[in-house]
Image (tube, rainbow, N blue to C red):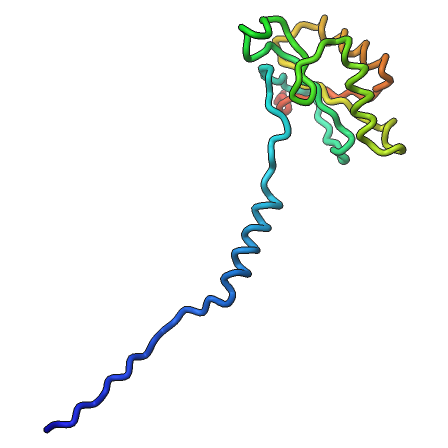
Length: 153
């Protein structure tokens, strides 16, 4: 009888000890870089273009007002409406809204609140001036108008 040699199978395995570390690094990367939408827009937004732009540093002091025609015309009508924090409000409710936004901030930051108004380009100046008047009544003196990119000359 002939001698048979046993074949040794060399098992090649992929090291998986670093796999959980890689998965957690990817998880943290996506958690840090993902931006979540804070509000659902209830009004139409076609922002006008600007001639001068300035970027703000501290975005925690900014509160947003959206002005435009409601998306659900059958429920809210076709007149321009004001949206603040996922709710449609009237101009007389702006003072109450500003005070609620100031209460969310610290004591030292309440005077530094900035209102960013994102108004649709089709909105007439009447509702905008009414909002400006109510913001003056609420002592919110810093007003910023949001726009898209800069107009090329």
